[in-house]
Image (cartoon, rainbow, N blue to C red):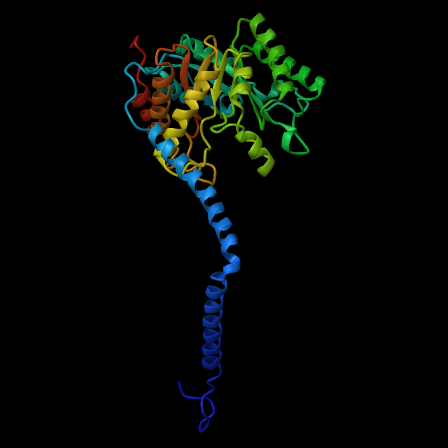
Length: 376
């Protein structure tokens, strides 16, 4: 392009600067290589290489292990035991859903092994109480399900954020709060619900106050001849991983297997929230579910129903990859874990999360992979 001042030589300063910078970078690269090759760095290099191996090798080993756990064929008969469940949103009890939605729900349920509906009736207040105004249509739903789906139970799903990792939330360490939660459980049973289902998070492994709460609530549900069920955290895939996660991130995602067993012994049903695993591939996720199924079976007493969660929702973030965490992979992983640990166990099922996000494809994968009741 012509210069703005005819007769003057164009300014070459930018070119010279770039050439000089390239020369400096080149000399820096040579100096870096020479410095890295210095004999004094022999041991630091070995330490760095060793650290890299310590990080990479366990990850590769874990990935290969999970992939292998997803291999093979499930054992014959590892199908529905007619003890399955589905989490239902709050719209079923606050008046938003009506007869049209009910007809669709009934159509989805028929021909499946679903026996329990965990219907969101909360959330609980942070003090443990539950305003009755939160579930004005509960009786309508309970009566409709009894009429249209005989044998299916409507349980009240009660949840809240715990104060374990923040300044606000429900504090199970307060006796008065636990007593109000017990009263809330009695309240929903008196309102017509057939059971109580807790989902309190984040709940740290080893929490004795939670165990105390379950003991107290179970006394109430037994008196009403109603089931007590809980949504449970995943189990440590490696020994004491929850302790490491708690120390590093302040959020111990997993429970120890022994604590899982302590919870399972205090309830009638325990449903593993086997999703939000951050697994990047369907095969790894399915292998992880197979592993979780095996660990949960080892810890759950024969008198307690064990259900494995199916991810019938489609958010895509750091903790949940939609393409990896599929209903099909979860069902296959569940069947593989059941096959290897206790293929004949009757008190076992799956639970879909959640009705308002599930697609026809999710329901089809559940039906196709887990099968229809023997009575059909």
